Length: 326
Ligand SMILES: NC(=O)c1ccc[n+]([C@@H]2O[C@H](COP(=O)([O-])OP(=O)(O)OC[C@H]3O[C@@H](n4cnc5c(N)ncnc54)[C@H](OP(=O)(O)O)[C@@H]3O)[C@@H](O)[C@H]2O)c1
Image (cartoon, rainbow, N blue to C red; front, side, top):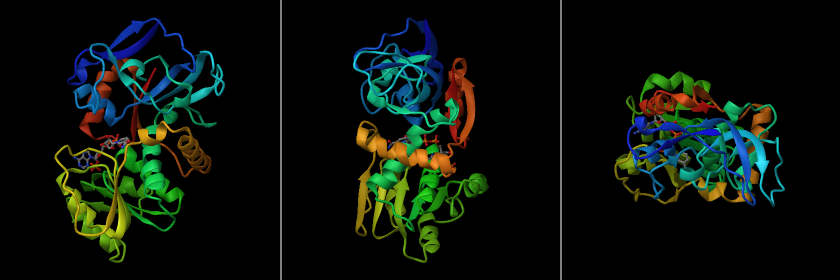
């Protein structure tokens, strides 16, 4: 038998509860993973609250889109991984059926990446979604190059912190925007070249000042909302804006005042493409070896404390990933 978190209706964190079920036998092309840890993501909170971007099964929806564990069994036609391999679950095509807040899950073999040597399960569970989003948005979409100034909003989010490290790893210059001064020192310690505090200054003007008036080559925005058009004035003439988040649920305003390439980025575009996944894993693996990439874990919670864990993430005080341990 195996324990998994499910919910029967959308709502507050209290809808989450544990059930015990027989383990699923892996089908063709599928490994079964014994999970050791699962990262909590905003997407999970949106799903639980009823704001998920696509329909899913209720009642009895599972939840969780990333995790780390060990391959426990394999179905037919699985050749890339073997029983006993430590792995990261990089994508869960059907979270409601195979979510990672569980002791076991079955996913396509193509959803797994090898867990880099020396990376424990908790940090491995904190790696993929944030860093693949940061890497995919900055490198694959925006074509970030050494020397680029990169303005990162919600810089203390897990995606923002990952973007600071990915930018530094490749020689770009991360400018970190945050709402209050509370996280300024931690953002500098995390590698930000400068911290722009929205409650103290106009972020777009401060970004232009920090780039000698030129503007940022790339803006990575995880906030959107009505401030988007003003934020975009921080970009250089002909720069690039990648929006990757939805932290402000109000309608976004479209920038129109200068030439700007705009991408709307969803990491699923890349994490379901094995060729890009291989590039991401190679770059993140190199960064882990040199120390340039080091996933920040704010706190761990036992699987039994999933309700408390969701409440904690919702409060917004975390600095780094919140991880469930099995
Ligand atoms: N495109 C993709 O594929 C993809 C993948 C993963 C995540 N995402 C999205 O990226 C965003 C960040 O996700 P995450 O899991 O990294 O978040 P998180 O770690 O929970 O981020 C929380 C931080 O964001 C900032 N924040 C929260 N609400 C804000 C608001 N209304 N305006 C400005 N800043 C706000 C706060 O930092 P300060 O207090 O320092 O301002 C807060 O500490 C989410 O919208 C998520 O859905 C997208």
